[in-house]
Structure formats: structure tokens, C-alpha cells
Length: 254
Image 1 (cartoon, rainbow, N blue to C red):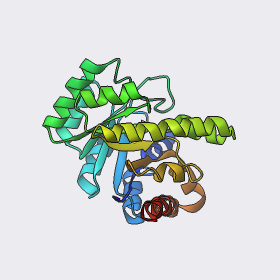
Image 2: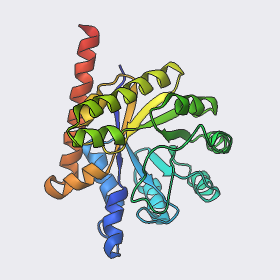
Image 3: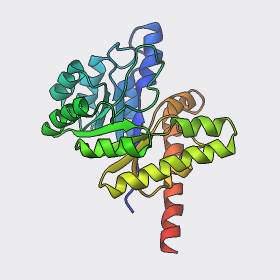
């Protein structure tokens, strides 16, 4: 079983910086801390309104950080041009609404198939690994596969919200959607990632799913960094992921 990768999203370090202006805290410094703490990649969402990560941040991340950069982006001509200019290791196509506080829900791959297929093709032709951030629904997974996206990232937000509400039935129901989505996507030959809202209490079950190859986690880690420091928060998350994965491996070999 392959090692589960951890991508650390540094968006909300930039959110804190932008709340006051100036240069501190520096999201590129956060990316360097993530590198030292054992992250496998850095994720950054360059939004159309530039509310957190800036164009200069992307330039510096590509120049200063040796880890793979996963650029989260809307499917717009502006973001296509930026991705093709900077050539990040990966690009994750996400929905984007100006009124939302952060990305809410997955992109409608089924409803926007033809437009997204063109975006996927352009990025893939530039040797950028393309993923689509989608809900764990069979029709969305099928649409992503049919347009040639090699990777999907399953939205785990509903599961995390249900877990926080202490509604065990809803939590289990939402987790089952992720499990079935991961299994189905893998059966179609897709590489499966997951993310959104994951924390110490919710990461274990998702990390234990053998089909999932990468988790992208950010907001929770930045919040925990206030209390324990960013590197310590990432190391703890990394340890919880590894423990969950090791338990899965033991079950497979028992």
C-alpha cells in the first residue's frame, strides 16, 4: 500500500496577513515550516478576488519551495493563463463564488462537462497534473473520469460537519459516501485525493481508506498553529494519518 501524502494548504496564513496588510505572517515561511514538518506538498488557492494568496505568493512558492505545488484554481481564462505560465506540479479545479468565505462544496463536473474538459486538456498538455474537487457522488466521479482528469479530490466537508454535530447517523452516512466514492473512483483508474474540514478527530477514518493517496489540509492546521506552532500541528496530523494507514495495512495482512 502506498504512503498517504499530506498536502498542507497555506491559504489562511495569507488570510491573517491580509487582515492587517503588510508582509506578516508570510505564507511562504509557512510552506517552509511545512516542509520541515514532513509535508509532501503545498496547496495554495489563487482566488479571482485575491482575498488571501497573491500572485507574488505563487511566484515565490515556485521559486523558493522544493515541494510540489498544488494550485487550486477556478476554471477561468485568467487562472488558466496563470497556471500555464507558472507550471505548478498540479492544479486542482475548484468552484468559486465571491460571496463564500471559503470553497463550499465540489465543482459540478457533470453539469459543466464540456467547459471543464477543455480546461483539463489544456493543463494536461502542459504536463500539469489535473484534479477536480468534487462531491463523492457517482455521477460527478463518472463525469471527471470521462473528461480525462487523472485525479479527483473528494470533498470531505459534509462528513466533518456531521462529526462536529455529534450526529452519529449523519456522520456515518457522510463517511460512507466518501468510502464508496473512493472505491468507485479507484475502480475507474482515477487517483483519489480528499480534503476540506479535516482535523485531528476526523482524519483517521479517511486516512484509513486504502484507495486515497493524498489528503489536503489547511485551515485546521493554521488554527492549531496558534496554540502549538505550525510544525508541531503538522507533525501530529502526519502521525495520525500514518497510524490510521498502518492499521489498515495490518488488517490487509492479518
